Image (cartoon, protein in one colour):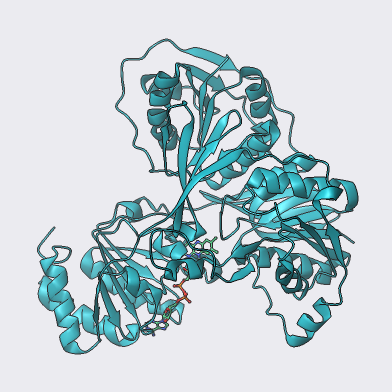
Length: 317
Length: 257
Ligand SMILES: Cc1cc2nc3c(=O)[nH]c(=O)nc-3n(C[C@H](O)[C@H](O)[C@H](O)COP(=O)(O)OP(=O)(O)OC[C@H]3O[C@@H](n4cnc5c(N)ncnc54)[C@H](O)[C@@H]3O)c2cc1C
C-alpha cells in the first residue's frame, strides 16, 4: 500500500499542501489522501484539488481536542503505510506530527520550507536551523517520510475537474485523558500583516506600552501594519501574539520594513528576510540589525520617530 | 508532592554563528549555552517545587565534555542531574534524543511531571517533548504558558494558532513550555558554588541497550546569507531628510498607492 497524506488544521492550508502533494503523488504513483473532520462539503473542494482519498475523522466530544486523533491516525498509517505524510505546522499539528512520528518510529522534518525528490525518489527537505542562520537539508530514511510545512510555503493550485474519490470513514477514537476545560479565541488575524506593503515593527527599544502610539502614528501615515518582536507579544503582551514576526511567529515580505528599537537577533531576522527594503532605527551602533538593513539609523527612537513623522508629512502630502 | 524532571540541551550559541564570514558554518569558535527555552523549563520545575514541594532533577543527553552545561543547569535550582553522555551523542536528531531519554527515564527515574522547552535554539524542531511522551505512553500538552496543579491534575493553558486553550490532564504527564511562562532567575555566585556539590548520575553508552539509529540524515548545512550592504546614517535632521528621499526614490513611500 502507499499514499501521500495531508493533514492541516484549516481549509486554506489543506489546499496549499494538496498542491505539492499532487505533484508527489504523480511522481511516486501513489494516491493523494487528505484528512477531514468538520464540514463534509469540503470534500468537493479537496477532490478538485487532487485528493483521491478522503479520511473522514469522526466528530469529537466537547471536551476533546484534535490531538485525540493521534492514536487513530498512527494506527491507520501502520495499516496503510503511506510513503509521505505532510502536515501543516500550526502549533497543534506540530505536536500531533511529532507524536505520530514517534509512534511510527519515523523521521520528521519540522518546518520544512522546500523539498524536492532526488534520483532515488527520496524527499530532500530543507529547514532553518540556528534561528535561521543556516539551512539544513535532510532526508528521512524511515517510512513514512514526514514533514510539517508552514502556512504560505506553497500556494494552492487551481481547481481541476474532479476525479474519482474513495471516502473512508474512520472509527471513533478512544477519548484522550487530556480534557478541554475552556477556550479563548483570538479575534485578531495576522493576514493583513503578511500581505502588508509596509510594516512598522516594534521592539523592546520602546520603554512603555503607551509609546506604541508613536509607532501607530508612523504606521498610519505610511499605510503600514504593525508587527513586533517576540518579547513584545509574548512577555509584555503589548500586541497580539499573531503579530510576532520571526522564527516562531510569522514571516512578512513587505516592500518596506521599519524596525523601531529592534536588536535584530537572528530569530527575528528570519521573518523579514524577504522584505525588499529594511530600515532600522536603533541607538546602539553595533546592533546586529544594521548588518541586515538597507538603511540603518543610529539614534534614539524617541527623538527620530517624531522628526521622521514630520518629514514624511511634508513629503507624502 | 510531585517528582519533577526537566530536560535541557547544551547548544552552540547561534549569536556566534552569524558573526563568522564565509559560506561554511563554522562551529569551532562558538560559545555554548543552555538552550533558551530550557531555562524556562528548569525555572518552571523549580517554581512548582517552591509552591508544591517534591523534588526536581534535570536531565540531558550530550557529549562527555558538556559538563559546563550540567553546572549551569544545577545552579538554576534542580537538586540532581542525570548526564547521559557519549562521544557519539552529538548532532543527534530528535527521534534519537527522545529514544535515549526515554530509555533512561523508563529504567531509572521516578517522575510525575516532565517539563521540556518548546524547542531548542539550535534545531528548533520542537519534537523531543511530544516524542518522549509518546514513547513513555503518557499524556502531553505542548506550548503551554501557564501551569498549576490541582488535586493531582495538571491545569494548563496552552497556545494554539487561533487562541488559548485551558486543559486538564492527569499525572504522570509531559508538558513543553513557552518562554512567557516565567522569567528564569539568574544564578548567583552561591548557586554556582553549590551546583558543583550536587549529585550527578553519569550514564554512558554501555548502560544503554537501544541502538538509537537516526531516522533523519543531514545531507548538507549551509549558512543563510542575510547581510545587506546597507547605508548607515546618523540621526540629525539632514540624515532624516536624506533617508526620506532615499525611501521615495526606492518607491516604497509616497506617490505610490
Ligand atoms: C528558539 C527561539 C525562537 C525565537 N523566535 C523569535 C521570533 O519569532 N521573533 C522574535 O522577534 N524573536 C524571537 N526570538 C527571540 C530573539 O532571540 C530576540 O530575543 C528578540 O527578537 C529580541 O527582541 P527585541 O529586538 O525587541 O529586543 P532586544 O534584543 O532587547 O533589543 C532592543 C533593542 O532596542 C534598542 N534600543 C533601546 N532603547 C532604544 C531607543 N531609545 N532608541 C532606539 N533603540 C533603542 C537596543 O539597542 C536594542 O538593540 C526567539 C528566540 C529563540 C531562542
